Length: 340
Ligand code: KG4
Ligand code: ZN
Image (cartoon, rainbow, N blue to C red; front, side, top):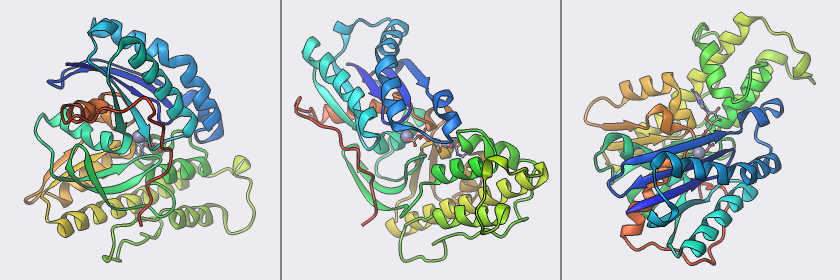
């Protein structure tokens, strides 16, 4: 089997060609970072329009690099949830059109499940059952992953996602978008103990939820006080920026590592699979590795599969094998996954 997977949930336009032996024949990602940078975050309308312009060239390029013709495809997979409504629709309409024209089956991909599945592609070994942890710009969610079609949410953020907090704090500090890599870069020269930022919900072991909006506010108070502030005209000393970035990054990592360990303890599972853009963070990778050393099989997606890509849509191959083909009535489901 050869599957074409499409990914347009947020601001990356991506296509990949993958075989049922999980060989990646091609992977193309067109980033929109440059379009959204001056806004400090993703503007949904701009993202959707850019997907319209880019998706077909990206698909063509993926097929060309794979040396595969449209007729060679066995199925089309597309991420349909969660994400930005307009962005998701562009991917789904393209996928349905290909399915109708080529008379091929349509397979739906849950973008969060795909982020966890990125670990399967890298490790080459079975990952189910596991605790799945998606730490991205839109989500911070822990799952009990039973099989490729059954992911039960164990907890998640009750306000901002970790990546969103990185992006907003970077914007306050005058750093570029996306904020995660920018914060990690300047934090390398800062003192992580310079500011005692809160670790929201970390000590409360009765649940597996996260909260990052209060941490974001604590950073705002530390750099600009409680009154009104025009962040664009704020001139912060580079040493202060580095210390705030390092202290903030450590606070986020403490929360993520602490709850991931709690999820393992609570479920009794011994395998942890981590994906999503924030999983590219070096401090997080290192400290999660140290904190889970004994008896835990830790998989963190490789850097190139942490941020959005279509390769992780290979989860569709396992779902296709299990008969999970969709009707062409299928709709997108933008809604965020919130803990109950
Ligand atoms: O998974 P992703 O590409 O998109 C979503 O599905 O949200 O994640 C993007 C997020 C952004 O918020 C970005 O700032 C963050 O991942 N990110 C990082 C790093 N690289 C990307 N956060 C912390 N450290 C990094 N090195
Ligand atoms: Zn993502």
